[in-house]
Length: 149
Image 1 (cartoon, helix red, strand yellow):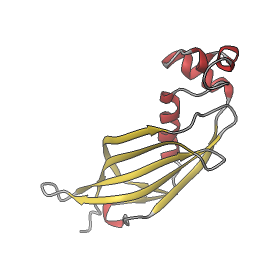
Image 2 (tube, helix red, strand yellow):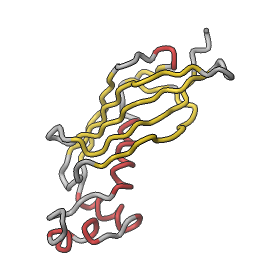
Image 3 (tube, one colour):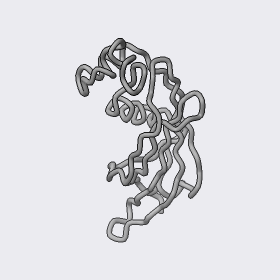
Image 4 (cartoon, one colour):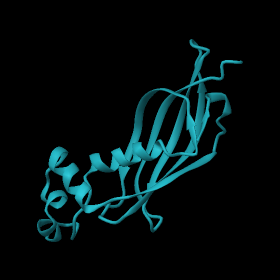
């Protein structure tokens, strides 16, 4: 894995993570702790829900996206997460789904007050094995500049 600084980031560059397979047991365990809705914790109840089957909770899906960010072949020299401008859910995540994260650089903003950093806006798209968007977000991250500049 290569670590890249603010200065090395290119607008419209796309970086793709490794994949991650979602298992039924982890869907249930995560939901029991953080979002105990029956369609996340009980396969029988989930079959009668609007989802017609067990689905991962939003907290779980976002955690997987975060984890996949650590598997990108290029990782930013992150100083701090600054926020999520948008977070939209498009499709349910189900047991056996294979997820991958695509990150596209939207914008670079140089810091006017601190020369050692900048802000990057990324479009983060989590896709399932069918290429369907699961969640999509625009994330702002503070990234270190190269020290030799």
